[in-house]
Image (cartoon, rainbow, N blue to C red):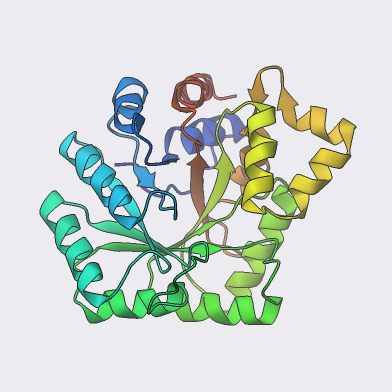
Length: 287
C-alpha cells in the first residue's frame, strides 16, 4: 500500500521521483474497470473507487470487493446522495469489513431526484461513526478553489467539522499549484491538522480532460486553460496532459511546517495504461 510520504532533502529530482512512485489512483466503476486495473496497475498502488448516480453506491462496493480480493488496497467512495438509509449503510460497512476494506472516502455526491436521509458528507460521516464502522482511514474532500454554490466561510466551517471525523483530506482538481499551496497553508492556520493529498489528473488526453473538467464543474483554472491558448499548450503535451508540473510545484513544500501537504492522488478517469506508463517513467528516471 502506498503511504503518505514525507519530503526529503535529497534534491528535487529524488523528491519528485518518490512522490510519483507513492501516488494512489482513483478509478470509475465501469464494466471493464477491474480487468483494466489488473492489466495495468501494480498491486502496491492503492486504489480509490468513485460513486456516481448512474451506477449507484453498490456498484462502487462491488468493484472494491473484487479489487480487494485481487490483492489491492482499496478505498470506496461513500456518497451521501447514494446511501439510502441507515440499514443500507450498515450493509455497506459490513461488506467492506468482510472484504478487508479498511478505508473509505466520504463525499456529498451529486444531487439526485429523490433526496435521502443524508443531505451532505458531514451527515453521512456522523452516521458512519454512529454505526461503528471499524475503518482505520476516512477521507474527506477539500476545495482549494472554493465551491460554486457554497461561500468560503461556510466551506471552511464544513471542512473543520468533517476533519474532526476524518483522517485525511484529498483535494479536488486544481491546475495552479500556487492556489493549492495558499489553501493548504490557510487550512493549517485555521487549525485543521490533517494530511492533505493533492488531486491531479492522470495522463489523459487533453480533449478528455477538458470534457471531464467541464462536466464536473471543476474550478476556475479549467476555464482559464480553455480560454488561454498559451497556458493550454504549456499544460498539455502531445497526446495527453502531463501531471508533472503540478507535482513539481508542490514537492518542495511536502512535509514543511506551514502546511500539511502529504502526497498526491491521481484521478485516472480510467486511462490506466498511459497513467501507469507516466508514473513508471517519472518514478524511475526522476523527471
